[in-house]
Length: 186
Image 1 (cartoon, rainbow, N blue to C red):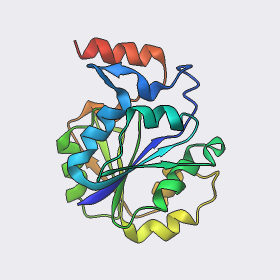
Image 2 (tube, one colour):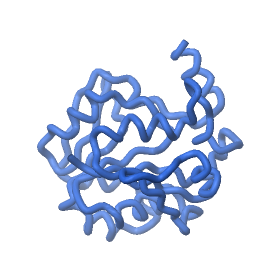
Image 3 (cartoon, rainbow, N blue to C red):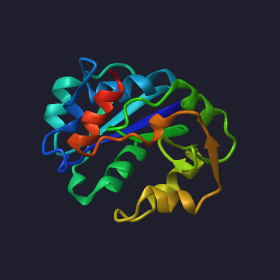
Image 4 (cartoon, one colour):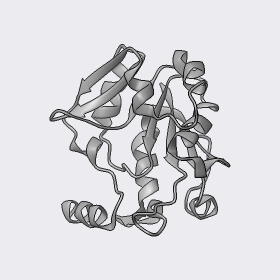
């Protein structure tokens, strides 16, 4: 098993409201992301920031889900990555909270890989989540806050895992992407 980090600390500036709250199939977006990851991890660190209290009102902590407030969320997404990585104690997944429908087969394929960093690819396009070995924790924590996961990933021994899951590419950054996702689910 592994642990998980879900990033939900941003401003949702392109949707102009808390996109983690957007309803899909009667549930908030962030709940779908948590539920997709939950069977493959023994702990999830949900990293909040700008909408901390709002997210806490819809996500309930339990033995698996722990909400962690990133006081540095204004410094960008990588600050939330670092905040989450400080908490993990074993291999872990990282995924933005706005990528809700990763298939079980994708999580399973990433767990079965062999390199210290693994990421899924669908039809030649790289997606989420990213799997990182705990052996890279200190190296990742030494990255500057203005770095990013792609840069870090590309400097490591990595494995590209081919998956049959278009959802690894489907994040919701705009209301148009949200409406497209809703139409696809009809």
